[in-house]
Amino acid sequence: MNQVVFEDEIVTPCKIVCVGRNYVEHIKELGNEIPEEMVLFLKPNSSISDDLYFVGDDNHYEGEISFLIKEGKIYGVGFGLDLTKRDLQSKLKSKGLPWERAKAFDKAAVFSKFVKIDELEVERVGMKLFINDKLSQEGGVELMIYKPNTILKEVKSFMSLDDFDIIMSGTPKGVGNYRRGDNFLAEIYVGEKLLISQKWIAK
Image (cartoon, rainbow, N blue to C red; front, side, top):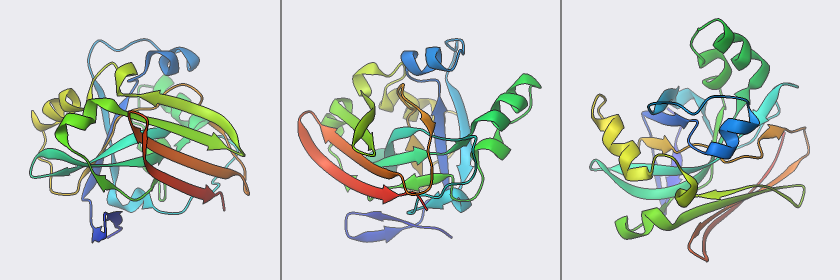
């Protein structure tokens, strides 16, 4: 089983629950409709990686604020890259088929370390993603259609969450392709305070 780092501990998520279409500007950039209800899909443990790999010309990065669950609550926060085979996803969507081939492949969920977060700070979390020193994505909870605790409540209404499962809360606008050798710098904030800074070089 693949693992992530939470504070100074190595932990094993069973699954990753992902929210699609949670930022209005990202919905517009992909030409999608704003959903009438929350869009949720899963990535398995086998998709977890702490390294970033180039997996094809149609592969897109999607930077996301990610939450670690413990005792049924949001307990930690980290940065996640939801890697997506965009052309394949579009083909599957056009046929009304599931997205797993485009979203749940090996090493399709790249994570920074996670750090503990107070429940009162969850609504103030933001993120930035720089690629080759250029700001590519920026967003935060205030821009989300569905806020973190609303997501958590919805997921728990039909699915059990084990300790250290992860919720990826959606991506703001600015997604795109990347190549081998690209430098990624991901940051997580609470207000103006930097909590996490993580670098990757695409392999």
